[in-house]
Image 1 (cartoon, helix red, strand yellow):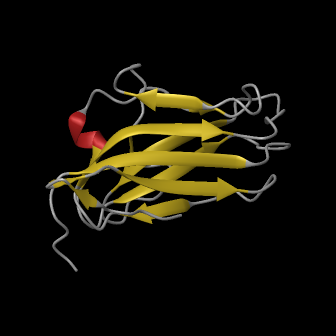
Image 2 (cartoon, helix red, strand yellow):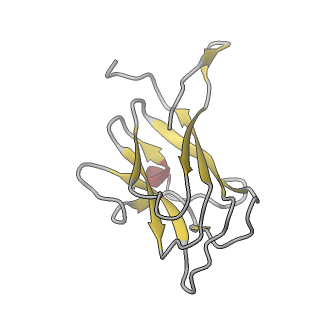
Length: 144
């Protein structure tokens, strides 16, 4: 996981945070701590092998503040990612395709807020998950 802030032509450019997980069981309580105020622009998810459990297997991006735990945060998406969907297919969620929450405050992270990945359901055969999250900075980092 990483985030990079680049400046060019007098403006701050969007940056990405990547999460990569191996086979079943390797997904759990993934966090990223915001070191700059930022807003979610879009996210993408792909997996090499889909989950096969009888119940729903989903992934949500959550805004976590204070001591909020994963599963109790505010969703940043309009709907969760279906981890039982076709393998090797990139699914993108953005404002343009109504994939992000319409609640602006839930798409924005202040310094110290966290992005949490909440996986719900039994992941069984799910493998090779890659989640990319793109943010745009809303101001300079103040804690460096």
